[in-house]
Image 1 (cartoon, rainbow, N blue to C red):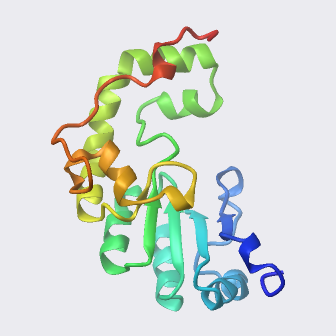
Image 2 (image 1 turned 30 degrees about the vertical axis):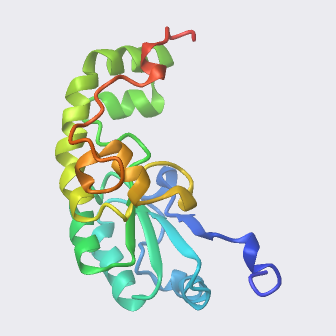
Image 3 (image 1 turned 45 degrees about the vertical axis):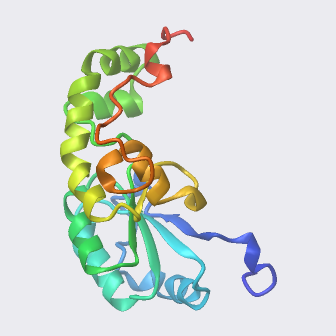
Length: 192
């Protein structure tokens, strides 16, 4: 299909989808070789990879084997390692579109809990969570403001969007402060 309708594809993935990550092949596995080679041969494509537990070493193997492939990675297990990967490889991008570093019991409520409980927790914990996310992501964003995705659309990625969320990243409309207002969805009632 790539040869027939190349514009139909933006990339390959999501690979390593989280519900089954414990049984999925790791990023450096031979099973992906043909897929990564196809992506490499069509340089405008990328691989969207959800890395799982202990996948950071295997992600490094994939990066070494396929240095010309662009990887968009996400997943809570690789967050502590992703800046190093980005420092070493200009073809690595990162997205924090899931739960931006929520700690404690919040991830379980986010993924499996009741909507009302999650919204209540978010309302009461918003400032702490924002501070946590700032500590986690600020160094990465400041080091690589053009390689972070803040939403779900690959084409909307990079400097202009990261400057909206992290104004000190040096991108357009830099104001020097982080927007601390609660999102609209946090101010609605659980039924709204």
